[in-house]
Length: 481
Image (tube, rainbow, N blue to C red; front, side):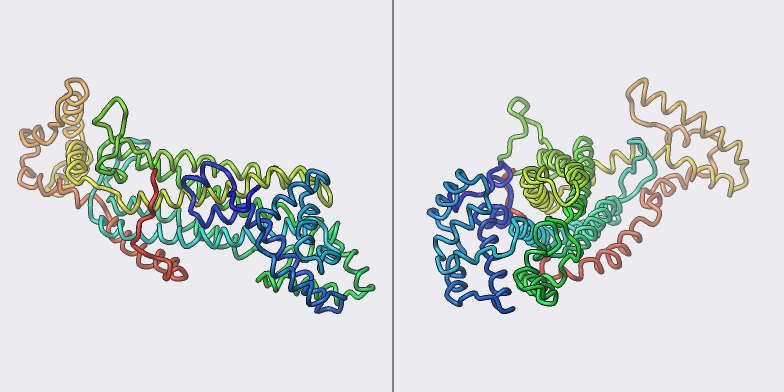
């Protein structure tokens, strides 16, 4: 395979960022193996093994694979049916002074597992600032619309009013949990280090003539070279696949969040209260020219579903590892780990694109409130009548009768809600006729939604985003979706 070939999926070739696609390219994968062999050789030399400066120099000069290197490794793998040994051979061809010491004392998982841990770390380092930036943009949107009343829904039926900003905070809060989960998964990552075939370090103990201190120092040095302060003290041939499950579960949870947000936007688009960005020349339907389909949100739901389901693969892979290691983890991990990161990366680019250009239609929102508010305001009317001396039971019965009449007009005749007109004509309610309009002000029905929004953004969001201040911007992810 050519050194320039990326991990070939539609996600990588069309939508994922170039940096994420490169991370899971064959070029990066096998270069990382070579770097790991250099770190091992340097640590072994530092601890007294007979490794020449020339050997290390040749290895360091040939970290980047050429097309010829890939061809040599491919031909060797056809013969040996072993990818690691094929690349040991290919590396030795270009670093002949090191050919005899490359991979000294190591097992294949020294390369594959340590490389994967480096990829997990680097992938999370790419995702986290993008997620923080999405939260930042949504927070600005929430503050901008913190006072705008809108219908709240329970059971997808109109309920008490909320505000557009407060509803946005529901999305932000979930994303903050995703930020926390991914940050924690990133912080928990350790290095496999040099542990040998079954994790006992027996091969390295033999190399160092039974010197346990040198074996421990070798483990520490290689981890340090890789930028890890911590190497797992206990491994089998592999690091525990529970680590993969932990990281992918955090990303899967983010995938579910994307489905949730995308679903809300799709519903709001159907009622014409809010829309995702729609370009001037964009076509919504090949047949229905008037349509403005929420295609980004739909794609977000689609990919979010895929990402959410990957945690099942990771958990199954972990649970099916027998004793010190079985190989049924290998092929599926080579699919699932890149897919998880590529999908999360694409989702963040879509989400950034959507939240950067959300369109709100206050007039439509006001009209929908007007359709439902008369029913919601009945409790206010009852309370005001009681305050003026009426019986609550009498007021409740009068409102009940008029509400049912107005409801029949809406449902059976398809006409507008005329409850307010009925109340204004009913002599029982004459004491509050002059107050009805003020009692119908939507702003009096949103409770503490504006205050909750402002406080949430100022306290919770601002604190959570402090580590990412340098990554926050107003730029929109360019994405042809």
